[in-house]
Amino acid sequence: MKMKWLVLVLGTSLALAACGGNDDAADKEPASENNETTTAGAGDAAKIYENKCSSCHAVNLEGGVGPNLTQVGSKLSKADIEKVIENGQGGMPPGILQGKEASMVAEWLAGHK
Image (cartoon, rainbow, N blue to C red; front, side):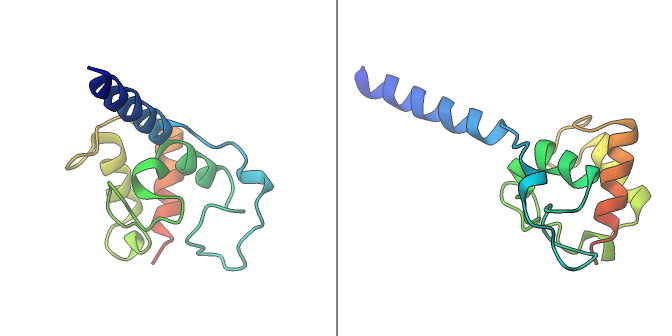
């Protein structure tokens, strides 16, 4: 019985940690290139991405649970990316970002080629 509780507590802790956001992006050093593959120094779109998307796609866009996004702009247009963000795709649920936030993140991701 104790083992079941331990597994439940650890599983819950991991799930909550994956959903948590990190608001200290402004404290990080900015990247030196315009098409950086990290969120550091990339502005509001990158902060939104980091808070809402990085738990599945990683802060450096290399993927994890979700797919790698480091070169998503070479495969999808801003409009295509925005549709995926708003409607979901595969295991990604719809509506994680909407409206202006979805548009900002889609534009930022479209620049990653």
